Image (cartoon, rainbow, N blue to C red; front, side, top):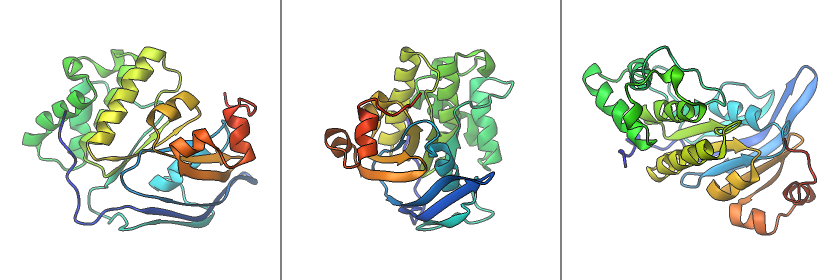
Length: 247
């Protein structure tokens, strides 16, 4: 359902993290994180609260500069050209307008021609199962519906990589299932998804590969089936047993 994103001639991916560290207020948040994030797989950054997941994602997206190490895209973003990556935050902000107008506004900022905006915005809402609410005020939608509008708004600009930060935090099971369905649809359309979660069930349902962070360090980076069947690190084994605080 929906249309696949238009690909640039050269991919942004793989993304290489080279000994990335981040210090804030004299406290080490991340230390010596090295990993390669490739195209194709749905990547989940997993770990207990306070592990550094959201900070790492913001560094990957360019919202924060690492205090040490490097973030290397295969073909970096070019200033003045539309970005090929997007991010949805845990608590997205909805504008005081309809769901479809929220997306049209994002498309206008991205330089999409006015004649194309409405059709593309509607297709994005179809992609997340909300076409029937296109004309509804975005701010009166439920939390789960707002999160899906935010995902549609980000996907509509056709990013190659979409970062999602705890996309179902504080949602009930029904809303969580709807958001996860939208995430799968966008992943299947060809957009690379990197998302954070501390929810083990969600990681099992969605992840193709896992980056497991513990206390600011990358404890494991492995295919999801291997991670859940036979975690290599003691921290990961404890986390899966519920022995590490993660709420």
